[in-house]
Length: 92
Image (tube, rainbow, N blue to C red):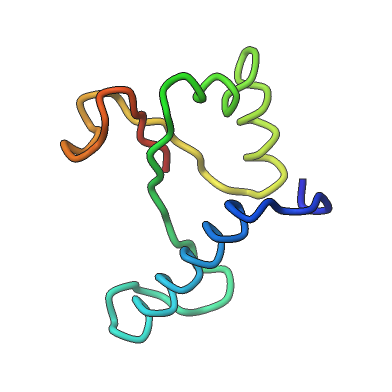
């Protein structure tokens, strides 16, 4: 919920993502700099936390998609990077 206070970890993730997008735009690595253009991010999430992200019957992830307009995907295990822990899931 946007009106809730962010934890330090959440604030850090937002700042890292924002800065990486800025740097990518400056170097021409991220296409599109117009307001409303989409930018994607991939995050490794511990497998035992995926249920918290999805919610019962997918209700939480559906609510997040609706509230933000974001496309949220959880990748198949064979698409998780090799550098990840065997207990990690990839979310975009």
